[in-house]
Image (cartoon, rainbow over all chains, first blue to last red; front, top):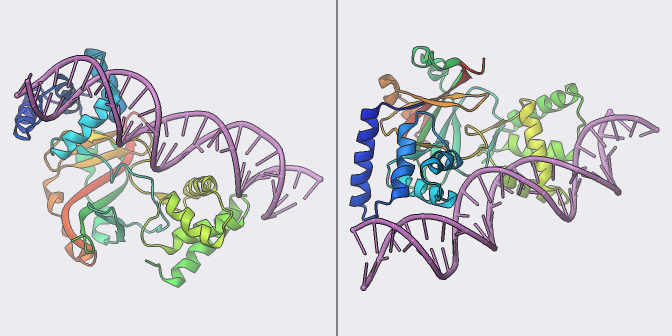
Length: 146
Length: 146
DNA sequence: CTTTTTGCAAACAATTTGCAAAAAA
DNA sequence: TTTTTTGCAAATTGTTTGCAAAAAG
């Protein structure tokens, strides 16, 4: 699925400015990799981006895709989805609850909040599918990291 | 950090009943692995559990920990944190937004909702740290999966 | 006893790294 | 022409699998 063309152009302009401002070089592969993510409403992973970009740049390598993705992430031009790219964690709390996640160290703590268990999001997502549950992730800095 | 002892006992009783009901065998390693997760408020990953359990069961192996963790997850006794144990995905949408995630196929779509950008969670998490942002993940079944 | 589960070792998949050649500024 | 970035290949990390021996019921 595709993002509106105007929005894509805007994102690419912003990207070019940010790369220049950071003193990084504007390479063909950086542009194409960014364009791919900026154009898509599903959020592709590295291999997904690689396969798409390879159509237009057959010599691109997967490790360049990875490096570029993290560079763009560090520049704040894109963001990595999910808590982290680390290992899966497990939780034995079966009551509905939400999570506080420390963006520095990855610490996770549960909290409960009745009001949030029934958040009214139906209208926002009815075009996508039906709801199973709603989970809030509060990102922050934990007490031992600040 | 540790969960209240009463709560731990309850969780273990529930675990034993569920294992029996599923026709699985109640092994020493399953009990110890479950006890470890049920006792902890941080949500350990496989190696974390492995290292803790190894103290009491030096012969346990990491692959048994993995197998057990997924078995317990399938039984609904614990749950895996984060969207999935797959690869990292990237997002070029820089406006504050939330996600709809399909629990079957992993499809992710953005949605915006002004009201949710300022959710009042401060009281719930002030013992943990300071807030950077609040993100809602709506889990559901997407239209092409149902 | 019969069937499931474990531990071991080897296989895999996702991601990262060192280094010389190629491209950007 | 200097410095960054790329592509390749090899290394690493997290996780999974086949199989014979051990444990559960």
